[in-house]
Length: 153
Image (cartoon, rainbow, N blue to C red; front, top):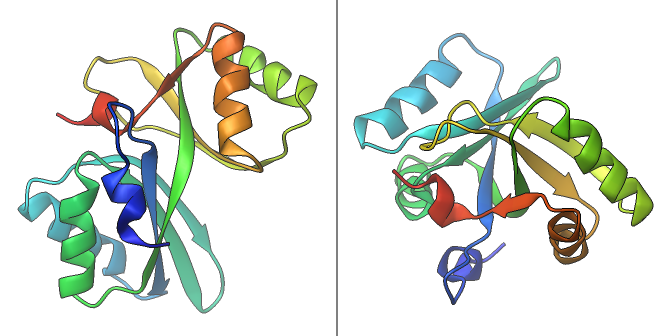
C-alpha cells in the first residue's frame, strides 16, 4: 500500500495497521515495542500470528506516520493496510457488530481488540471484505466507527 493511506484527506482518517513479518527469535517483539515506545509512538492494538519459522505482528499506533518512518529506517519488512475500527460501550455490543456485518453479507477476515483508547472505551479493529460498506453499515446500526484521529493522544 502506498502512503496515500497516511495522507487521507478530510477530518476522518481511517485506522492504519502495520503488519510486520518477523523471524521467530527471542526478543524480536521486545525490539519492536522498544523502538516505537522510545520515539513516543504508542501501540494501541496488537495481534500476533505465529508460525513455525516466522510471525506476523499486526499493530495499530497512535501516530502511523512516525511508525512508518521508524520501521523503514530500521529495515523492518512491513505492509500497511486500512482497517475499520468500531467503538463498543459494553461487551454485548460485539453481537451488534457481528449481526450488522452478517446482515450486510460482509466477510470478516480477522478481528482483534484495542489495548487502550484515550477515552477509555472498548474498541475492535476489523479486517473486512469491504471497509466502506462495513463502516456505513455499522454507523446505520448506531455503532461508532472510529478513525486515526480518535486514537491519537
